[in-house]
Length: 75
Image 1 (cartoon, rainbow, N blue to C red):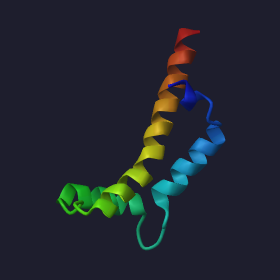
Image 2: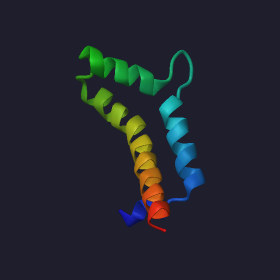
Image 3: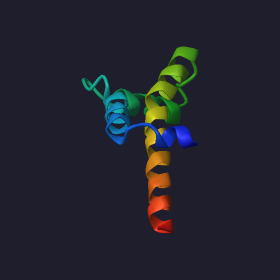
Image 4: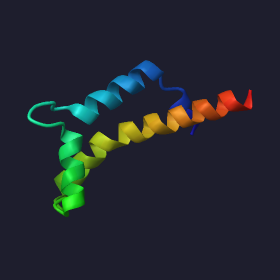
């Protein structure tokens, strides 16, 4: 998990926010994919790949923020 700590925070936030919203019109892509997941329409391999592509940066950012908080609390 140390590789996550080596990613510059500014880049990580930028990539996570951009991929969570892109394309921004008519609705954010991540919102569309989560809606498809909850409605049971996320079944095509390309949709699953797209869902992962747009979700993984947010997960990595959450892990990084959690690890930073853990380090601060131990100090």
